[in-house]
Image 1 (cartoon, helix red, strand yellow):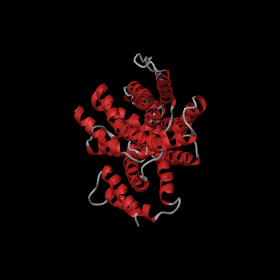
Image 2 (tube, rainbow, N blue to C red):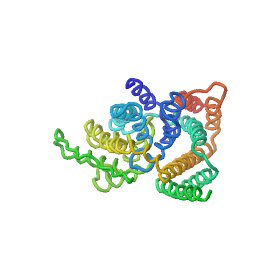
Image 3 (cartoon, one colour):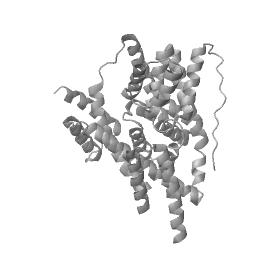
Image 4 (cartoon, helix red, strand yellow):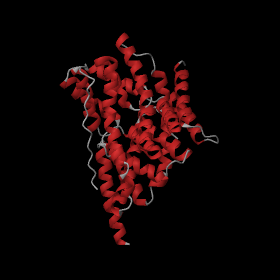
Length: 371
């Protein structure tokens, strides 16, 4: 069982390009559709709840799935298997960047991957939507939250507000016809005497404990902490670190690995990575057992249903925004061609898995860049 967990999440860790929405789509395909290790309804419950706690959403979903499949050890193995490939690749980029002051040319591959993952996100939305959209009112709620996300409303606030409104509406309709506290363990590092390393670790631990939303809002947190407070990076160095996190598969928060190496070498990379992801392991371990209990109350179950629909609404907003950026800003016939190929691979007579679609996008992106 544990070997299978490691194998599955390592595969996702080296193929999960495209950001949190694409990562979750790949997990749904592997964990629910293909292996049937979990019901789609429970997957939705975990996805909705994960959007309401700090930390990287898709990485926390990995931890939830590992905990569900293999207990505490399963959670640790799943999280490590998903994070470490991206962290290692990001570290390689950091070493190259510090040595040469630039990145290797990867843009053609990324241009091909972006339209390919649109198909993966769309397929997951269709499958999850069939389970989550139980009533006509849910469709209205999902559209409203998607519109709010496109309008610019903070995604966590939009999901929480959608959950509350949906819960009240559902309970009102039914009549007509636990607060969980999270506490991080007190951490001490007896082996690290270097004050800079300790400050680096604690800085990323703090960011990991308060970072809401997707990994893409990380830049605001890092700017305040590393540029304004500590003065360790320039604005350009920070932007390059964020780019490195996007170049690699897996969680965008492996930007921490890049920054840690920039600041303090290999020890810095290790401690920054550990610091930013450790709170997520704690949050997930506390939250996971509570989610099934919420299904026993009509009010909390209605809240979960509404949160799930709201999370799908935000996912739809992300899909629309990414589609516009990848296909029409500016109009790109190469991206449209890759999208068509990916659509055939996903919905055609012979369905291909997400990693193959991502690989197709990367290769075709490079080939078409030569034209």
